[in-house]
Amino acid sequence: MSGNERQLLRKGRPLWLSGASGPPLLRYAALKDRLEADVAIVGGGITGALVACTFAEAGVSVVLLEGARVGCGSTAASSALLLQEPDHGMAQLAERYGSRISHRLWQSSRAAVGDFIALLRRRRIACDLVERDAIYYATEAAAVERLRRELGFRTRAGFEAEWLTPGAIRMATGIAARAAIRTSGSAQLNPYRACLGLVAAAASSGAQIFEGSPVRRITPARDRVRVHTASGHVDAARVVVATGYATAHFRPLVGRFRMYRTYVLATRPLGRSERKEVGLGDVMVWDTERPYHYARWTADHRLLMGGEDRLVEPGQRRGAQFVRATADLRRHFEALLPAVADIPIEAAWEGLFALTPDSLPYIGPHRRYPGHLFALGYGGNGMTFSFLAARMLLEQWQGVRAADHHLFRFGRLR
Image (cartoon, rainbow, N blue to C red; front, side, top):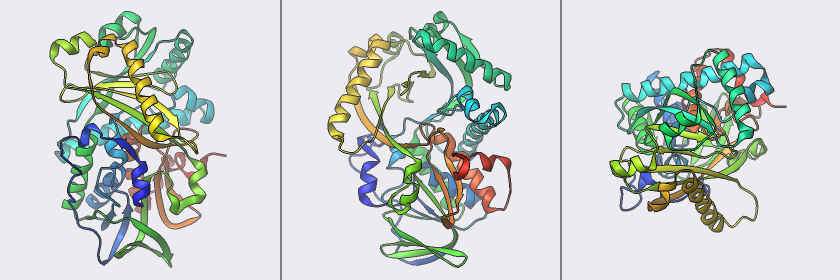
């Protein structure tokens, strides 16, 4: 990924990077050699970190190449809600693919969250990980019936979920909503620390990590690929492209994604009485609006508020859009949680993400690119799908054929 592309990934100073007085120092050297590996990974965000850790633990020789610094792109811009639910609900996915596939997609997502939590705990990665219930709420009357239909799909598929009345919602969240679904099993964390910890875990299992090593080109050669940087290259049996979206290297794939900017606000740390006045309990909340809004508490008791996603279009004035979107986001939450109006915002930032037409990622090979495996287009649920991608790509590398691979293939959309 080039320096210009890296600059597009986020704007503002994310909360997760604010502990340092400036950009973190390089933790890994740049590639200045010719190396061989089973697998080369392009991208040092949470996806690349998970792929590197998963492959290295399985005994695969891995080289990870990050153009700038590990975890400082889209990962650092994440609000890090580790949700079981894809962006599209079970009912919406059933309309496209049928109930059986919809159920399986959700089962895969739920399993990925549980296994991701288990990995972080097993490797003792300090990233403020905590499990939280998620409350999916509707403030508009027109959305209540859709929410009830969604609950029906979930319960028939064996997912435990609780229907909340307006009084129960207000007690749990402080929000005046008409109805909500409450589920357990989701989690939240510090995405930057998680990424650094996973990369360190990969290195401890034998992976070679290089920062400051943007990939210039990738060339296939017989049954291998060569990944070129400015001052070295890696010859590998496979290359995993974990850049989040199709970069300039893969222009034929660009049309498969729509690019969005998402916005996040963080307050200063709040005391117990202030948190009580805000009214949000120890849960993660998100709404049925599109684009949706979400909120959660951080480990140091800051209120994190996100949403107001905007489609990236030619000719946009990014700075002006940032000002408008963050102002709209603040107004939304001041109306939702009135006590927020009296609380200063200490950090505001935006991130870039790619969305596919069905909100699901592309995971696996593409016939146009021999020797390549891709993990792209996670939508708003990148943490969950990143883990799913790492597991599926390892299975594909090992020659394991699973029905789930078909669900995320490039050819699924017509």
